[in-house]
Image 1 (cartoon, rainbow, N blue to C red):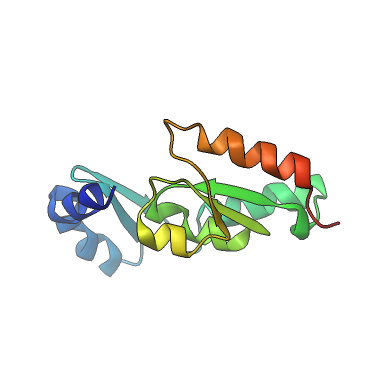
Image 2 (image 1 turned 180 degrees about the vertical axis):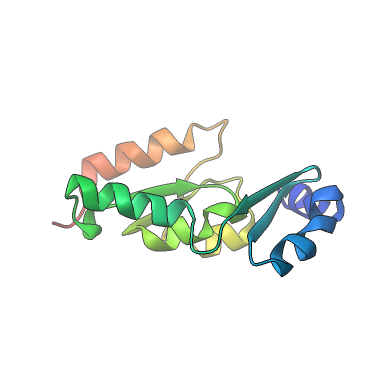
Length: 121
C-alpha cells in the first residue's frame, strides 16, 4: 500500500493537490489518477456525525473502519477507529486498532469483534 500512496502523490492527482488546496478545498491523492476532493469543513467524519446525531447514537458507541488517507478524520472521530491491515502507516497510526486486509476480510473481523465485546454505553 505504501508504494501505491507514493505513486499517487507522483501521478497526475498528486500534481493537482497544491492547486486544489490553494482554493480552500481538501484534496487527498488516492491513486496516481484519483484525487478525493471535498469542500472545506466537510468529510466522512462530518457526515457520520450528522447521521449519529439524527439516529440518537451516543458518541461512545461509534466505530469507523478505513484504509486510506481520506479516512483519517473519520477514524479520529469514532469512539473506535479501526484501520485495515493494508492501510498506509499514517492511517494505522491514527487508529485505535488494526484489523486484517481486504483479502483477510478485516472489516468483517473488526465488526465481529465489536459485536462480541460491545462498546461503552
